[in-house]
Image (cartoon, rainbow, N blue to C red):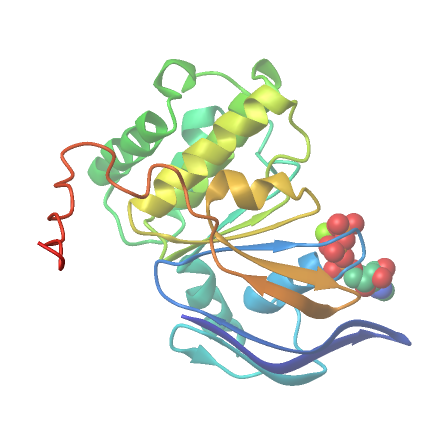
Length: 244
Ligand SMILES: Nc1ncnc2c1ncn2[C@@H]1O[C@H](COP(=O)(O)OP(=O)(O)OP(=O)(O)O)[C@@H](O)[C@H]1O
Ligand SMILES: [Mg+2]
């Protein structure tokens, strides 16, 4: 799904990513955790092909190569749903319009389909009641829900999020992470980059530690207490007593 092969990115003398190699499968949940300046946003912008690597190869689905032509980049972005720390909603459009625009821009859907698709995404994030509101009338958590609806409305194969809870207080941050986790459980691959170590645990994903542009550790998902069936488990058969 996403593969980096010895990818480096330099900004003049600063090496932001240093020969990074990693891979994530379809439907996987990966969290890149690392301090400010570690290279997290750079890594996401390489995936979206807003940036080209200084060396190495980035593959996203069937898109492979350093410099995709503009038309291909546009196609690639449509397979991605992107969520930002600062929401990036259009302030002069309602919540409904912010999400509906993402459907219209694909050019794939007749007007009659735009409305039900938009409403379905708003329902998934629990914002049906706020569809006529403008971003300025929403709480930060609601703004992020609207941005998530916009990111998932076209059913992308991968959802990317750059510090999605950075602007939220702890209770809304938890809700947003639970929502992202649900989206992942419904089948989307999810890639979150964050400075917050707790995000990996909340999402239950694989955690890659990014430090000074390198992957310092690759940790399997923490085992959720709910991963094992708690009820209806047949007890192991009693072992026959060899002495009997
Ligand atoms: N456009 C740019 N020009 C020059 N240097 C840059 C540019 N963008 C990023 N850098 C540098 O590259 C390094 C990695 O930046 P990046 O934005 O990827 O970090 P980050 O992990 O996302 O940090 P944060 O958690 O603060 O968002 C930093 O040292 C940064 O100063
Ligand atoms: Mg960043």
